[in-house]
Image (tube, rainbow, N blue to C red; front, side, top):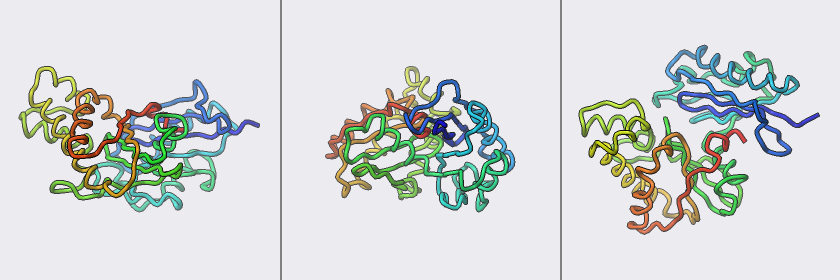
Length: 278
């Protein structure tokens, strides 16, 4: 019997799932499914959205009974309890046993559901088969609805938990994710955008949009310098939805890091969303 499991990646507003062949460590063609999730909805609504997509992928191999999920934190991954609070996503799940709720919906045992930090899963995928295969010490950042981070040192990957570090007048989570771009553009222009993709389309005609991306680069460079000065890294890898606008901030980020004495290569994820699934 083939060694097949479901891999699922939970984003701030979506879920993606697919069947994974653990022997080849590849996604089975035709089994990928993606769906929108209202992360501000009720616990029942969120679990239903997740379960629906996972069940669609399970149809591709009915004998499969094991599920691995890349989940944002803070989270008790072993016991399946969510501690996400005050982060504008999945707050309805606070202190609930997500593993138990999912097991009931998709018809598997709780022991057959493995939950791991999403940023750590992303970096594991890149270390195994992506942009960090030759690196010994990598920092992986996922930039999107939230700010995820993970460290890989000699092949051992862990959540770096940079999201909660202080920066400016708040924490990193509020300065290096979609909400910051939306808020900052409104402050400097008086206009509104819904997301970073929409903002990126304005760069050619809006000096304020360009300014926001430049500020983001400067801020991220300073944050990385101040928080990683004692870790001997040899590579930065960036993933997440915001990398779709990397042409507007990546060169500036490289320049700012070099300017303040951080001389490390920066690469965009090769596997993107597939990294966490694998």
